Length: 359
Image (tube, rainbow, N blue to C red; front, side, top):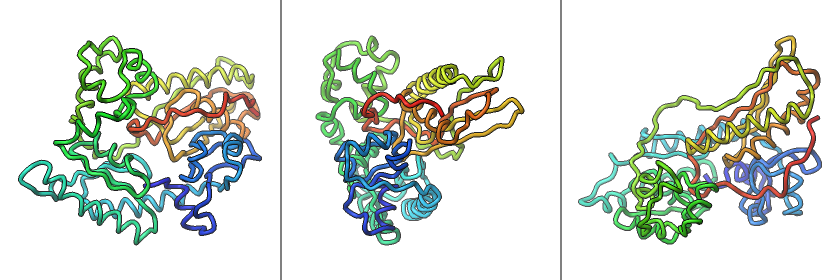
């Protein structure tokens, strides 16, 4: 879906159409951006950014509080259309994104012909969503998950991109190496040091990639040529990563709590990077001396992976909910809504370091 949260708000409130809409806490309060319309993104506004930074980047932005129940219900309806029109071989990776295997509904004497025959399915799906929900979707058609994902991102919003098997290497060649699945900021910098800036550079690189990306070298080369053997994950298990710390003595010391959150954020971020995942939901958990346990969370439209983002959101949740109102026995940080790392990596500037204190 295209700018899903913001698009739902613009649909439901026609006066917001064409305006830079920011879904999140108002800039007058300590809060963060959950989503931004394309009009707001032109100013550099992104998910997980402090709302005050978003206001500084886009003074004309209209701030709207998230309605997560509405977005989840909208997602349920849309994914029903996806399953009915495109078949039930569907891997829903987030509230607004899914892979669908339509091999059984395509035909042709060649692989490319079979891919072309999927265009009417994609067109029917886009039209059904537009007619039933008054929202736009972008669809990528390709011989594997890597290329389908790249295609879905290629011409947003309201795009439809076909990447033929015979043209996949040429399609990838001019793209930045960061476009490939699993290539984040660290890997990109390592490849840049080797003179590899585009996928084409990677395709023609004759040296050993292992000093730069380790054991992932062989798979990265396959990705560079548009080859991807990953199957659809048809399981519906909710995946999450978390880290907790139980103190020897209950504490409400802010430096101690911040240090714990930083370590937990770094641990979780490391696991996300190693598994090539990103998170859409961040949760904090606290337990008091009487064993009362509370947890609070925030969901973002675009996934995050950086430890600094996780730490900042954890601190914000603690402060917003005033969870450190008495000494804590335990503090924990967790992420869920895990998705494969986006083709266009979401490593963006956040408008300066987060410096607010815990409340």
